[in-house]
Length: 422
Image (cartoon, rainbow, N blue to C red; front, side, top):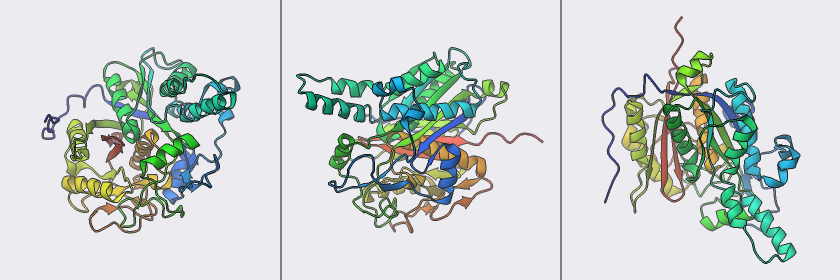
């Protein structure tokens, strides 16, 4: 059996001096806040965006809770002429990309050169668009369909629409690795920066809150059937019984650190290390992804200040992640948080939203809480940040973990930007 190479001891990394990638812009669309500032304030307050489904009649389904983008009006983010040709994922992506580029201080229509591109993640494709097509076909009795082709095409529709709107003529692609997709897209974007791209829009958004998408989630068997929004999604808790689905995510502007500095952009933090693994048969490899990311960053586990965990909310998966974290850091060895308990799991948007949370945590020196979970299970001996944010004045390095259905694992190390000299 072939296995990935083991990480080497931490030491100087070949890319620490040159080709360093810094995140200079953040755009967020989350169930508990539209826009980065609103979402971050809600997250630190422990305010949830999970509630009863309203986007369709869910009264006949066994699960009726979700994290919806309350107040997100599609027509405000895309020209009306494009509405029939786009799905909700694309519209969310356009809104998040606009905020991220504005936050980065990029002049509209004038990105830094032809090397600017878009690499994002999606796991839903055109689920809602495909459903609309099926409904129309059933109504008209059409003889043939191309719904699956439409769904596959919409995996790349978001990056294409972002590139067209903002005149980003560089590399573009879409990553499909479910919840791990946001980190995988960020890793690929960093690779493009190292190969000469000046700027990349990256991250992920997702939305599957339609009957077609809901049927797939129910078939998977991992959704919580609890009807209480405050207790439906409980990572690492003895009462954990599944997760809640949400929509949204975050898009980020990634730049070469030297180029960003020349235009006066400091950035939220550097992408110091990235790694991905794939589970073997009865062989979880999340720990290995974390080890490889730390080795890529040239740091040891002792230098990690906080972990933004995947937090599946299912007992066996939680035990597996806890085992990996305890092997790396020791029991209760590092603060751990799962702020997605306030949004639900967002598919490809979940990990990139965690990256946004980690960057703002590094900026504000505070770790957001895990809501719902009150006390970790005895077989998950973690220092879980619960109930309230935790101030950490020395916070400098964060590890973000993600697992996607099917065996995908991803890890990213983020470091706060250097403190300016007095």
